[in-house]
Length: 134
Image (cartoon, rainbow, N blue to C red; front, side, top):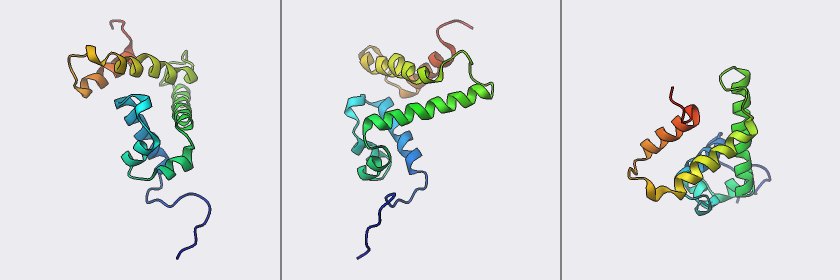
């Protein structure tokens, strides 16, 4: 029997932490936040909940990691001149979550079109262009 050693749990994917973050984002976008468990995220990513706990410890820490990663990417985009420098990177993620995803799920009954592609197109347009006519 092989003796267990401390450290990172064994896994086949070297980018498992990134894959877990992406899986969580996809599940949170498609489901109510409270309905998604760490076990669901692990299953979606073809790993165990122990791996999710190893990297994040809790759902709250996972969300914090998503927000920090998003903020860092926005900051880099601002440095590269690709993103509006007037935006505060730490406020963009909570704004998107509170004004887009929560509203989308809360008012899902109002949507005649249940096509996910149309919802994604709407969200991208809203985030990137707002409601102002070009």
